[in-house]
Length: 152
Image (cartoon, rainbow, N blue to C red):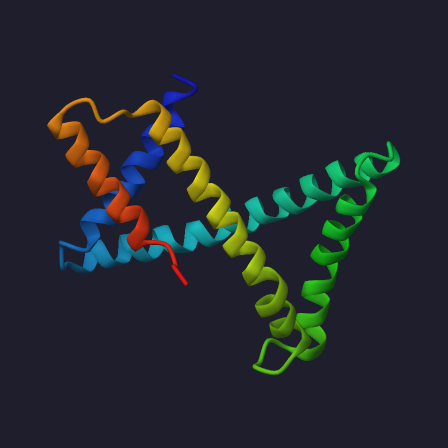
């Protein structure tokens, strides 16, 4: 019951958010707004927990002298981006946007490409085209994978 209750709450919340798009009623929109407000509160707590956990893990690994350069780079990046955003803002020609467009966006594309490769290789190993329906499903998955990636 301890594991099923949070899943049940998440399922009911998601179902209410989904059904809100199909029911045009004042109660529905009020309930949607309430869920969105609670979501912001939960997100703020999750962000604080994530930042504190990231700092604790990296600082403890810095003390052990384990991959110091990578850990130090991550901590410097995590602290410098909000500082740059507070000092210069997030408008078009600011250091924050320059770092985001020239460092963050290429790294994000690289991680996406690696993830797509791992998913494609794992699905190829685990899902062989042994029958006609399996081949059709594999072909449609390949088309979707190629349509969602930037080629060129």
